[in-house]
Amino acid sequence: MNARLTLNMEKHLIDSAKEYSAKTGKSLSRLVADFFELLRHDEQLEQTSQLPPTVQSLKGVLKGSGATAEDYKKYLEAKHL
Image 1: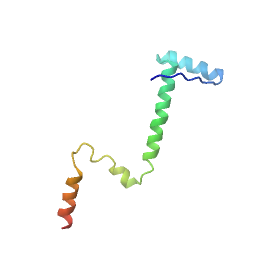
Image 2: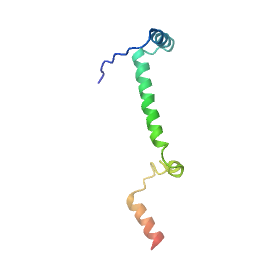
Image 3: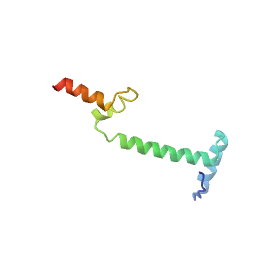
Image 4: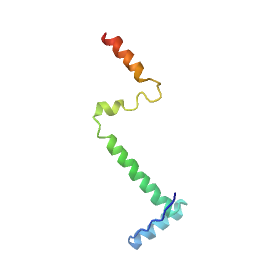
């Protein structure tokens, strides 16, 4: 769902944004939306980078492997019993 947003900023910034918009063929709305997406992405990266390095290096390693909690339980039982 789209909604309106009114921005107030200095004229030179608006003029610069309009020039950039014309050069890239993107609307000002698209440029602002892309910027907000970038902010959200940066925030997610910041949250991820707060993990300890060892944990960070393991994050996502099992994605798509099909391993289940039951598989892990069996592994631990075989290892420790």
